[in-house]
Image (cartoon, rainbow, N blue to C red; front, side):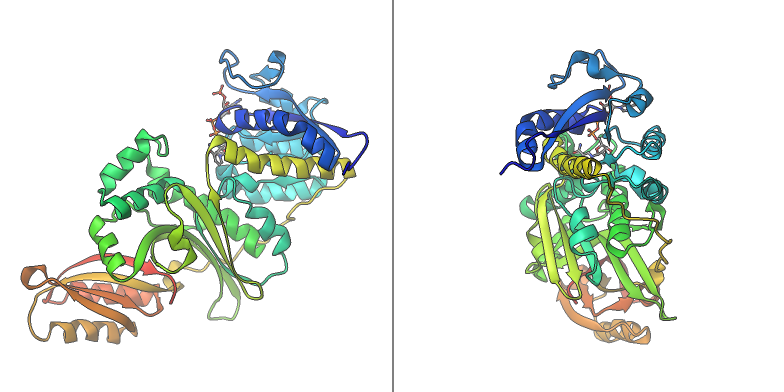
Amino acid sequence: MNASPDPVSVRVGLLGCGHVGAALAALVAERRSEVARRRGLDLEVTRIAVRNTAIDRDVPVADDAFTTDAAAVVSDPDVDVVVEVMGGIEPARELVSTALAAGKPVVTANKELLANHGAELYALAEANGVDLLFEAAVAGAIPIMRPLRESLAAEPITRVMGIVNGTTNFILTRMADDGASYGDALAEAQGLGYAERDPTADVEGYDAGAKAAIMATVAFGARVVAGDVYHEGISGITVADIEFAADLKHCIKLLAVAEQTVADDGQAQVGVRVHPTLVPLDHPLASVNGSFNAVFVEGGAAGDLMLYGRGAGGRPTASAVLGDLVDAAGNLARGHGATIGTLERARIAPIDDVVSAYYLNVEVDDRPGVLAAVAAVFGEHGVSIRSMEQEGMGSEARLVFITHGARERDLRATLHDLRSLDAVRAVGSVLRVIGD
Ligand SMILES: NC(=O)c1ccc[n+]([C@@H]2O[C@H](COP(=O)([O-])OP(=O)(O)OC[C@H]3O[C@@H](n4cnc5c(N)ncnc54)[C@H](OP(=O)(O)O)[C@@H]3O)[C@@H](O)[C@H]2O)c1
């Protein structure tokens, strides 16, 4: 079916031509006639800003499209829509703001920018009636922003959980499947180009945290920023933890969790956190392995939903950017934008108030009365034990617990008192568990 006999010309200014930008320029050219046929839009990348114009980029655009003057791309009257795929906060923030203020729709893949300055940019888009779309900023190719913003806009979402960092998922999968140590799995991820030379942003959960802030903002319609997110990374996870988890029919995943709960005063609050988590093997997130991503949404009416796919890579990410670009171009052609509006600041749940089940691994003396003493400490703080197993004997003895849902502050008090028991040699890993 031909949506329009004369496709509307939409000229695209690209800020950045790296992994994502170059793949996008190629994809726009490849899909041009199909987009024109199906959506009545003739998309063309006309200007591209880069740092270094001397690099031979092999992208299907005219040589004179390239410039180092990104501001000139934004202000060019021959650019209708701006795509920001340069990354980082400045000058991306300034350029995106200028485009929106000039009434030009913007598509971005920049999680760092949105997790720190999203609210001011959404407000600017709203004030100017233009799109600011960012599907690729969370979980790469997986379409999760649009479903959260549109299909699930009226759904009472209670929780969104994502495996949104492919590097850490690759490392944890290698440790689980092949018994690789954390260090060896990280080195392999670096060798394959999944992990940066400085892997801190991935392994300590900052990358996933920025995505969690964006997911929380869109899922709950309230402003959450990167600084609101509680982080724990995977660098302390051992093969022994993974084996203990497997004995308990769980695997370990780094999850980004955004949930809406009710505070003691009856007001809604949003909890946002990233941490390694024991996931039951029969939970859909347990089957997400290697560098793949998935986002699991718990809805009050819809029930559970999961989207799965590639969370990174130039072409998969460019696919999500192109989807946004087609939407933004279509809205521009029709003369309206689809923004998420001006958002109130979310009330953030303190981590101490968060309720979760926990896995604890406690090294103890192997003698009578120890189990009773340890169990009594849990009881004193109102932390109820769901399951307990004893592993090893003598100086190797340890007790592995999974608790029922407990408040973080009660769990911390339990840990404090366990550490002061004579019979407890050490408290090893303490990890949250989903599925209680
Ligand atoms: N790569 C992925 O798999 C992926 C997945 C999801 C989201 N993203 C997001 O997509 C964005 C782009 O990622 P990427 O991997 O494509 O990055 P990249 O390969 O490093 O490319 C960045 C591009 O931006 C250009 N650039 C940077 N600063 C500039 C400036 N001040 N003026 C003009 N040009 C500038 C660079 O120019 P030169 O080429 O001349 O250096 C380069 O072409 C980031 O926000 C990232 O978080 C990436």
